Length: 162
Ligand code: RP5
Picture 1 (cartoon, rainbow, N blue to C red):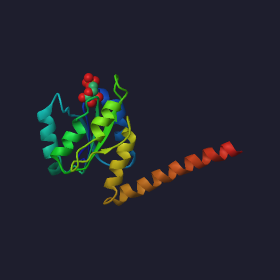
Picture 2 (cartoon, rainbow, N blue to C red):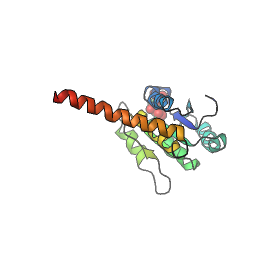
Picture 3 (cartoon, rainbow, N blue to C red):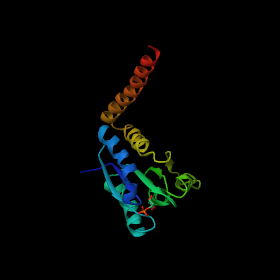
């Protein structure tokens, strides 16, 4: 995509099935994004130059997913002032508890807005909500999205009550 304002990064292509959910919601809400792999452990220099250059490239929000010893969101947050949303990916050995704890327990001064384990879609919605502060078009789409959520539940409730 040209001129992305949200960057979706992940530690490995094995995270893609979850991180794709963030991309899909951004598509729906009309937010331009880029999507790539940046590994804190396997490509530390790439991670540093990505985080250092993101603001100058026009990126407003970073969504970072990682699993296991999930240092990517926190390290990126340590390098840039851009808000970072962390997505803990469900790991094989510890079911994602390791990922969640690695991402959420940041030291004071360096927050990562952490969503639930495998919460790719919520990360996308949260990024769009941040963008909607200054983007009227995204704001309208979000309001419509939320109203559809409400309608869907009301319709289900109605059917149950019949
Ligand atoms: C992390 O290690 C990645 O974010 C991924 O969730 C996990 C496993 O990576 P692979 O071994 O599948 O590449 O860095």
